[in-house]
Image (cartoon, rainbow, N blue to C red; front, side, top):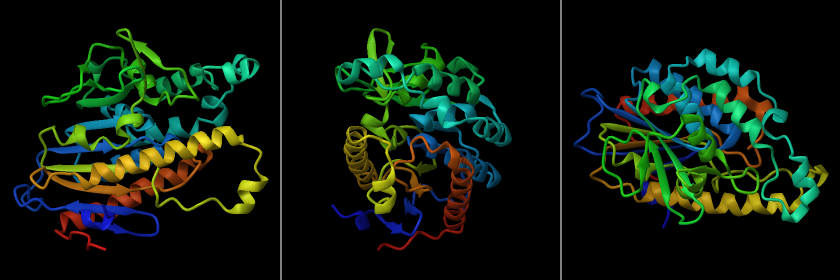
Length: 322
C-alpha cells in the first residue's frame, strides 16, 4: 500500500490530504465540521493552533474527536476555553510537571508498573480543561481509550452516530482524559467501570474510523503523532544524551512504528463515499513527547499548517498526487 495512492502531498514539514467527495462540496458552505486531534504528547499543543485557524476560517467544529493529549486540547476547546487561555496554560507547564519520576518505581526497577507519577498528568488536565463532566461541554466531544485486557477501542462522550465500540458519557471527564493519555510504561491505566483503560493511541492515534461515523460535511484531521516522515535525530545528539535510557527508547521506537502504520492505514482506508477529508501533518518530530519547551513552536506549526491546508480546501484545490 503506497501513501501516494491516498492523494497525499508530502512536504518538508506537513502532509496535507484532501480526498474529494462530490456529495460534500466545500464551496457551497460547510455546515458540519468534525475535527480530529491526534495523540502526540507535547506536540499536541499544535492542535490549539489548528483550532485558532479553523475558527478564523469560519469553520468552528460541530464535533471534536480526540486521542491522548489531543483529547485534552479538544476538551479544552469544547469547554469554551479561548486560544489565549490555552496558550497561558501551556506556558505555565514544565517538563517536571508531567514527567516527574515515581521514586517507588525506581526502587522497584523492572518490577515497576509505571515510571512517572500520575498526579502530574492529572494536574495538567485540570489546568487545561475547566469542565469536569461531558455534559458541561459546549461542543460534542468523543474521547478514545484502549481496554488493556480485551484490546477494545472504548469511546467516551458524544458520538452522534452508532459505533461498534462501547460508548460511555457518564464517567468523569478528567478520569477519561487521563485514561486516554496513560501510555503504558509511563503511566498506570485508569480503572473506569471495572475496565483497565489506557492511551487511546494504542488503537486509534488518529481516530478517523470514529470520525467517519459522525455526520459531517468536512473532516479535518490534525496529525502530530508518530510517522515515518519524522527525520532521525542527529547522531551526535543521540550519542550525547543520557536520557531516555535505552530500554525506554526501545519502547518508544516500537510504539512509533506501530502508531505510524496505524495512521497510514486509517488514511488509506477512508471511504470514497465518506465526507471530504483534510489531513494536516502539523508536526513531525521524534522523541518530542515531553518537549514542553517547544510549546510555542508547536502552537505556531499547528496554526500555520492548518491555515495553508484550509486555504487550499476552500479554494477548491486538492493536493496533487505524488
